[in-house]
Image (tube, rainbow, N blue to C red; front, side, top):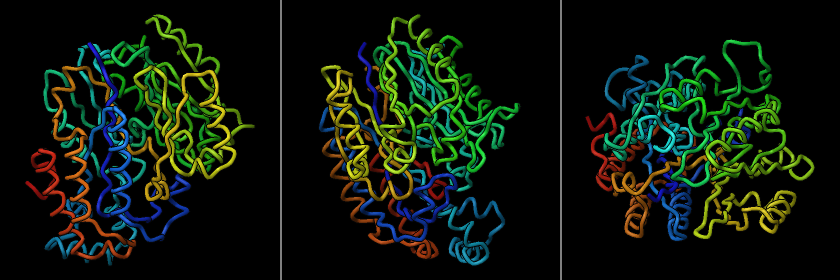
Length: 446
């Protein structure tokens, strides 16, 4: 049976702004207080989805979340009408209100960890929603993320959904941003690589400057929930020194596709031993291992952080070769661009390059890989997906009109206090749930 990697990209939310909320994400904090353009951000994301769909890649859509999150503010004791809640929260604690208004759910690589049916004990596709408990503006995403995934992958014959891990630092889980899968082909069994930043119950090395958001304990728990086995999982620790240089997730320093693992040579601890383990486990399922190490002399860690070279997408073309999708920032760095030209001209499997302008997302710290959740589906599973969430010409036109109708073209952090923004958000999201046939997934709809 044929199988495909379907990239479900997150739609940028209506409150997209630059509040600099993500300590450890250099791009996010360095653009704090800049004026954002939510309409442009959403259109840039849609343009990427449509272009890849037109090239023959399977592409889906995930909805944004309601912001400001009135439900959370009420949980924190703010009372009265929704407008009263906004006023009092924004006056009492502006920093908290800014976090509750974040549109960071657009980066759906953090929404969940997905294991395909070829890897799981029960032969179903498993989704474990991330708790994202390192940042309050992301930890509040769990309920709507769960509802959205269940609305798109609703058939229990094929899909199994798990709630997020406990909201406790021991189980800090950042989703697919710290997860890679290596395989011979999408429909074959693979080996899933879980990258973590620290162990909660050990004295192993940890970063000093920035937090290690993913714990070993969380990765191990997600593997259990997703019904994986010891023979098809490998746990690798991220290099603490690169976390301290702004590599807050593994997908800022490595990216995989099929048997290929493109990574910076400084990305991991105990690289040689861990790669031997990966190679050995892949050999048992008749799959080669093709690591491609980028040397520090070619591209520094700082170059990688500044350009998001590794926050790219590797996609398999019909002839079996691979395309790398990178942000415009890679073209603007001579060292990174020179490396990419050498990469695609070389003898390896990556022989094509596509550049996208994702400036609005990039300035907030998210590139092409951040914007998508990879879901491997065979023919039957793909047919069982809510087809209204699959990108095609008709959906692209509908969503483009939707964005142009509802989104502002200018938004600052101060604008979040405007109570009309909440009404705009709810009006748009209510229409979106009908466009995508999602049902009532938001608190205001219930």
